[in-house]
Length: 225
Ligand SMILES: C[S@@+](CC[C@H](N)C(=O)[O-])C[C@H]1O[C@@H](n2cnc3c(N)ncnc32)[C@H](O)[C@@H]1O
Image (tube, rainbow, N blue to C red; front, side):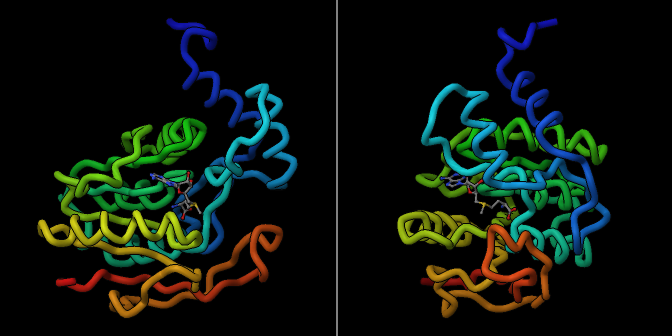
């Protein structure tokens, strides 16, 4: 067996287990995640653990409104994913991918660019008794193949991000994938390109948002440009 020094993913997993608490996700109680109670404190602890400043916020330690909406929608409409290959893009905790796996998706890949998130995806999937493959990679220059369903929770909160995510999602859609995103009214979601599938009032962490509940829409990307 590799020691934590030789296996950074195991070390990250051990860190996450001590720095967060496993509990049911508000609005999606079928799923439990390792979540933080205090975002800023965890961010500082993470930087101390890595021995460097300027790390991204610990997005992986929370269920974001967009992902919570998509997870709720998937669990209530399992036919969207059952037996299909699913990509959870920008997966954070892996919440959306775990929902898909619980619904019998054929294979679930959860892509992230934060190695802590990839570790969180692994231990969260294990805690829910499902198989989700965490991938530490930026896939945005591709088209998500071979995924038949591309799910993304809360990815339109920054202009530069949106400018890369939308073309990726359009390429995935153009090659035949079903593309579904969850969004709580972020500034850079091009609403005219999407059709609403469901709308929820999602409880969120008030410290991270401007409210304790966010109206969250689950959208399907329309065909065509
Ligand atoms: C607001 S969080 C949403 C996490 C999760 N989908 C949810 O809704 O709970 C956005 C996530 O996007 C990830 N991210 C940003 N750019 C990315 C990229 N190019 N590829 C994959 N993940 C990315 C960040 O690391 C972060 O975890």
